[in-house]
Length: 123
Image (cartoon, rainbow, N blue to C red; front, side, top):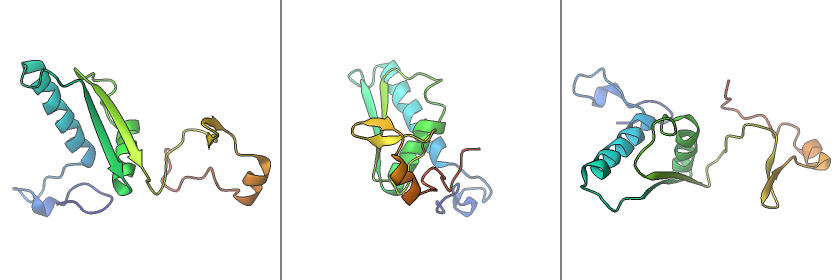
């Protein structure tokens, strides 16, 4: 059982105390697919796409940023596709404009002075 914005509800676990994060579930899924590929059970597996829409897009983007997948290579490519999340995490003040990352123009920054303040934070 999952509560919104947190780890699983321990009341849903066998011992009533254990929890698991959404990231751990996605990581375990990728590990299981990697083991199946390595063992020959999924010989044609070449790419895994983790895709999410809305709140699913948020978890997919956060997983792409914060998971352990890049330092632990899998025997296939992993792609994250975040569709229409209510917020995106950016590492700098640039935003997508005209097909590239660029600073918003001065007028846009005046109209929306807090455009670069992400309420979830990365610190």
